[in-house]
Structures are given as structure tokens and as C-alpha cells.
Length: 381
Ligand SMILES: *Cc1c(COP(=O)(O)O)cnc(C)c1O
Image 1 (tube, protein in one colour):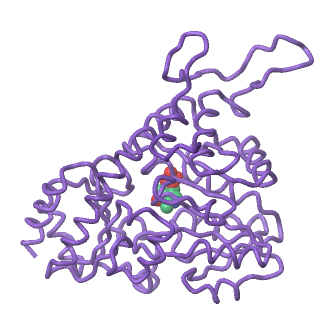
Image 2 (spheres, helix red, strand yellow):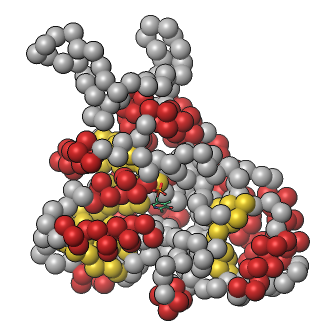
């Protein structure tokens, strides 16, 4: 019998201590492990290579994503770079044009130093994806829904095409988490997470995760993790395990609130555009809703320009105004000066990242309070 994901969130993160019966796993603050024999070592020998607290987290995320192996890193970027460093000199990568900024920087500034090249495409256009494949292409890298305009890629269709060309599919599942979307079940070969966001859920840690269901990729990621050494600490592994326990309960509330806020914003005269893949107003909601449980907890919206953004910022009382997302507190971000500041104005505008675009990560505050706050602030525009 397979348990539902709500039960799995609790079961996979709980390990009863065989000697004390303690139901919460200890934080194994140790760098090394005593060996009882000179020739045969136990399961653990050094904490960069393996740590029991980190192992519990790695097993949990592997099960939640329906993979066979999981790996925990010191940040989302450490996880993403480790996954991409399984590529070798001469390999080529096809990657979504609106990937996370840190991923863009790693792929454009660092991979070329190792002889690994990339072509950026709009992955909604599967013909363009196929056209970008070369005989050296090894990976198709996707993020769906993407940041900050929540564009959607059909994971199954993309995976089928990629596999016909012997290309592996990596998906950044940060925005959805395994509670809402499970890319490995849709044909992806590897999933990465910034667990800093929804999985951790409390804006109190940085972490990254990789999961794969492929033995060879698993060996390669383990080798990079152990060689480059950006492992997650025992304390943060423990904190992340605690965050994951409430992922479902948090997302149930946050996604219902996000949908209500998206509907409110759509009806508001001063809001020129709302991006939310859970509603039929999104052009690809039909694809998104076949591969995900709902539209998620992120709503982006356009209020026309920078002046309007300044006014809204001045009058909003509840959301914190900062980078990041996925916390229990609502977080409002301004991509123009935050996540996408390094991008040229034309590149930004081509992607819909206008001077009036805001991204709201909906938290656990009462949704009617959040709407009243938005309503008040928008009344000054
Ligand atoms: C934040 C984020 C990352 C990077 O993760 P860090 O934990 O900040 O290193 C990668 N992908 C997405 C989609 C993100 O939102």
C-alpha cells in the first residue's frame, strides 16, 4: 500500500531511535566516526561523505520525489551546480531561457570554463527545443512554472522528445515541491530544489537538494557532492526535516490564498496583468494543471510602472519586501531591481519583466487580511 503524500511527509522525516525511542532524529554533530576494525569500516567514516542526519533528509526527499537517491547541499545553487557538473568537457546543454538568475550565471560564466556549452530556448516551443539539440547535447534543463512570469513547460512532452534524442531532463522543482508536482513521474531524470524556499518554509535556512531515479546519474552526483564538498550541515539538515513535515499543511493554505488573491487582482482595475498558472486566465493552465495539483503559492502581477510600485511599497503593511519566497510570511519582490537587476531592459521586457511587475509569495497570514492590505495600498494608485 502506498501512503498519500501528506502521510509520506511525516513518515519519511521521522525516525524512531532504536535505543531511546526518541521520535525526533538527533542532530549528529560529528565530523568523523570511530571504526572498530582496522580493515573493515562501518557505514559512516567522515561527514563530508555521509552523515546520519543528512542521510535521513536525503532518503526522505528521494522518496517524496519518487527517486532512488537524494543528495543535500549547502544551497540551491550548490545543488544545481553539482547536478550540472556531472557534464564533461565537450558536452552541450539546452536550457530554458527564463531560468533562475543564479543558474543563468553558473551556466554562462562557469560551465564554459570547463568546455561545457549551452543554448537557451523558450521551452514552451518544443520545436525550438529539438532544433537546439546537437549530437553533443546531454541535458535539457527546465524550470516550470518559471520565475517570475510563471510560464509553463509540458514536462512529459519535453521528456519524451529529449529521450528520443538520448538527452536527459533536469527539472528545477523549487516553485512546486513534490507536494504539488513530481517531475520524475512525468519522465524527468533528475530534480533539483532550492530547499531554502517552500521545503524549508520558514526563511531560516539555505539548502539545496538533488534527486534522481537513475543509478549512473546518482553515482555521478554523489561523486561531485563528495569531491566538491558543498554538503548541508547536520543542523540545517535537521531544520529542513522539520520544515518538510508541515509542507503539505502550509501549501494547502498558501495555495488556496494565492488563488483567491490572484482572482482579486484580476478583478482590480489598476492591475494590468496577473500571472497565475492555476486559473484559466493563464494561457497554459490546462498543461500546468495536468502536471501539478494546483497553481502554487506564487502570484505575479503588473501595476503599470515603477512609480506605482513605489506607491504600493509605501502603503503595504503585511508582506515583507525582499528577495526569496516560500516562507510562512508573505514576501513581495520587485524583479526589476532584485532577481533580474543584472538583465538588460530589452531582455527583461522581452520576458514580461516590466518596471511594474511584482511577485508575491503568499504566506500563512489570513487571506482576507492580505487582500484588505493590497486593496488599501492599490487605492493610492
Ligand atoms: C532560490 C532559487 C534557486 C537558488 O537557490 P539558493 O538556495 O538561493 O541557492 C534556484 N532555483 C530557484 C527556482 C530558486 O527560486
